[in-house]
Length: 366
Image 1 (cartoon, rainbow, N blue to C red):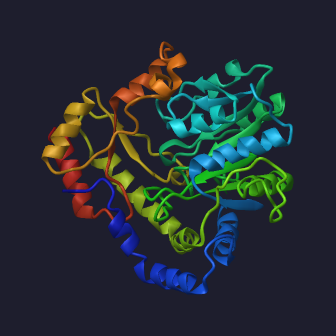
Image 2 (image 1 turned 180 degrees about the vertical axis):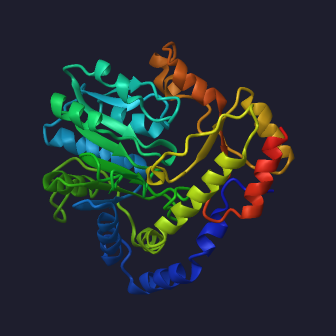
């Protein structure tokens, strides 16, 4: 079986460094809010080019904390609207509604799977306070038009950077393009921990101060609680793992690009619609390699019979989920087509040339 993602093999590549750092942390007796988290935060902010990074418990919390901090600052208030792509993973939308803000769904561009930039302005109202940009599947979405819209309507740009660490726009890395960004380090991400972990990045000193407090029970000073906060802290062990793997993220992303380029060059089955390989290769880090086909379930079964594991990201769009049942009658045809037709092929830093060639050969025979 060719695994969709061989996490064991990915992490074993760093085994010696990770084990040595974990052992030192174990022996230190300090497991939260310590030097390992500080070191990872410092290295992460230097990597992406941000002024502040704050380690948190997971990617969803990262987005929740950003929005909550803007509410505490008076930039947003309950009932305000946040524009978000309709085809994103539901976590992006949960972060908005959890803060009693209103998600405003915008259809994606079928060519990139990212939010259709040309459809954003028509959704802006007097209650719109932010645009959540999701760099879906690892491809950056940003433009001068988005920057101009944010200035024109005084909107915050919040990046959901869960899938795109290392991607670039005009030489700047995702996570540093907008006003604030949330990162997920779920194990399957390009930069993955050994469990749930996340981070926030921003260039606003006050925003960073409030987010750090909110993530620590609303406290910047022990036993003094300024805000009604959360417990959302990155621990020392996960910070160690992430700090080791961060050193290799560009190498790992380069391998993902090689695999994507080979898929796009050599898959020639007319039943398969391939993703675009951007002119500037740095715009995409290929967290996922997502193809489309009319009979997606049939293709998935065919590949499974040939011992190729695939996944569907994602089978049900957010507006059709029971969690948002008030939206169930709404129609977002582009989003629905994407969720109905997409299939993710294996891609990772450790997939072999032989495995890639086998996948291509079998798909071409479908």
